[in-house]
Length: 97
Image 1 (tube, rainbow, N blue to C red):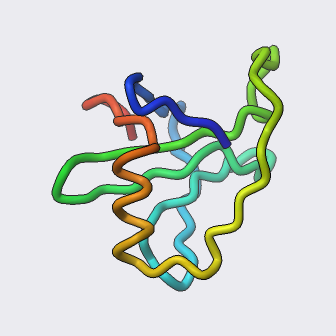
Image 2 (image 1 turned 120 degrees about the vertical axis):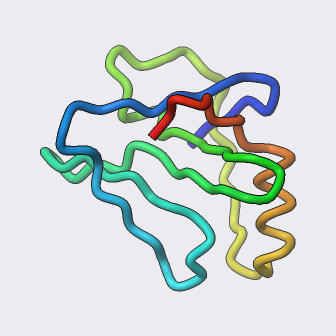
């Protein structure tokens, strides 16, 4: 996944839209392609706005980005998770699904 807190992200799709899945914490919507099941991105809404990240490997052609750095947020509480996402994720454009 990648993000740019200074950028803008728009998820679009033809009808029908992507499948949305929420894990147990119910803090974000995981967007899955209805055709192939690949995870395309993740979105979140908060009082501050809407934010998202996208899976670089779902793009064709692939972008030339820095090497990925493994992350583990498994011990993070809901409030810490929300604050991290608001600070690090890309703001979603108004027209984004």
